[in-house]
Image 1: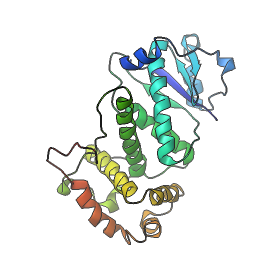
Image 2: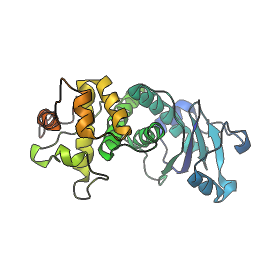
Image 3: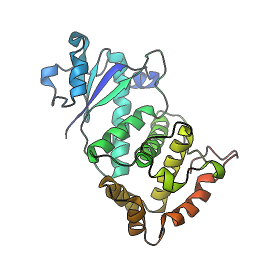
Length: 262
C-alpha cells in the first residue's frame, strides 16, 4: 500500500481527537526511514525551506511532514477515517501523492474541508488526466459531507450530512454546468451546491452506473454520449436528466427540511 505524504504547515487543533489519541501521540519517524519519498516537486521544494523544522510521521495510508505533533496528531486520526470512507464510496482502496494544507492554527479546522481535499487527492490518483470540474467538486462535497457526519457521530455527536437545496430559478443549466472548467465567480455557492446535489442524485438513482459514468468521464468521453449509454433506462438524454434532477435539486428549498439528510 503506497502512502500519501501530507505536508502540514499550520493546522488547527481538533480537541476531541487529541483527547482520544493523546497529545503528541503521532510517532516521529526519521525522514530516511519513511516507507517512500514524496515524488511531488512542490513537496520537495517545501521541505527544503527550513528543513530542520520539519518532523515526519507515518500511519497506514499517509506520510506526514509537520512542525508540531499536537497539530498533526488529530489530523492523522481524521485523515485515516476519511480515507476509509472515500475508498468505500469509490469501491477502491489505493492512493498516493501529496496533500498540502495551509491553515492558521488560531482558526478551527472544522467542517468537511479535510475530507474534501482528501477526496480530491484520491480522485487525482485514479484519474491523473482530470475529470470535469462539476464532477470533481461534486464528489468531493458529497463524500466529505457524509464522512464528516460519520466522524462526528463516532465521537458521540448527533450529526447528519447536509445537502443544500437549490431554488429552481437559481439552477445552472446542466448543459452549462458540465462544461465549466472552474466555478463561475458570480455563482460559486450555487455551483458547489448543484454539483454535490447532482452527484447525490446520480448515486441514489444507480450507484454502479454512477461509478461507470465516473470512469467514462475520467477517460474524457463526452457527458452527452456517456450518460444515455450508462443510464439507458433512466436518462435517454441530458434533457431527460435535467427534467428529473430539477425537481430533486429544489426539494425542500426554503423549508425547515432543507438541511435534513436526504
